[in-house]
Length: 263
Image 1 (spheres, rainbow, N blue to C red):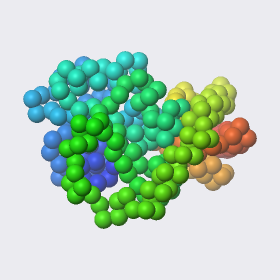
Image 2 (tube, rainbow, N blue to C red; image 1 turned 90 degrees about the vertical axis):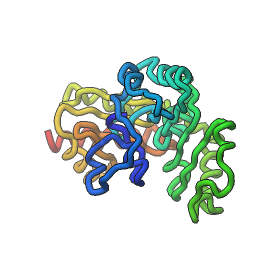
Image 3 (cartoon, rainbow, N blue to C red; image 1 turned 60 degrees about the horizontal axis):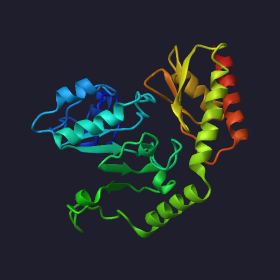
Image 4 (cartoon, one colour; image 1 turned 60 degrees about the vertical axis):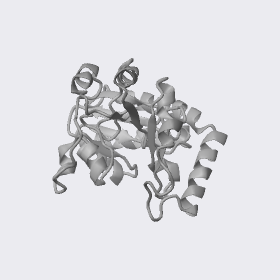
């Protein structure tokens, strides 16, 4: 999908439909087509007899916190069922409770065939995982695809502890509560500063500016809040799932302070 981000190894960087990430790594691999996110008509038009799968992020995080319209993900599921394709959800940024459900797909009622996970799965140690429906998973046997240090005892222990903690401490529920609180706090700044909108789900939040957001991101870091500018105009927030109201208020105060120093 256009504006997607799937990684920096050769296959995933090719799947990433942002030219800026391709520079210096050409030629890209063959076999990928890019279509606009949230456009079922364009997706269907791109399907051919060579198509084997549709790869999509339930919410495009790095691409600008782009939220799918109602029915889009179900429409992709229907296209895959009609054309006998796999539906692959890249949940590297949307799984692990961030959107308010353990997996992002659960909040949309659409079940993919394959899920990819990483980042928060290891709580800071490097691990990636692929989950698949049984008939797909059974096409892999030990040694089919592996990495020397993949699935080692340290990272798997970290992943197991992370999963257990998210479930036992109901952090997905907290993500919804604190996400709404964060979005509400940021929206209160809209009338005073050049803010276009606040969008997101759970604790994946984007503050869309009417001006270049890169100076604001830098100023927030200078004032003690780690955030990032994506797609030039969007300040993106992905705070820890165990934040509390005090943390949110502190973050919003830093954003306001940073804005007051720039605008």
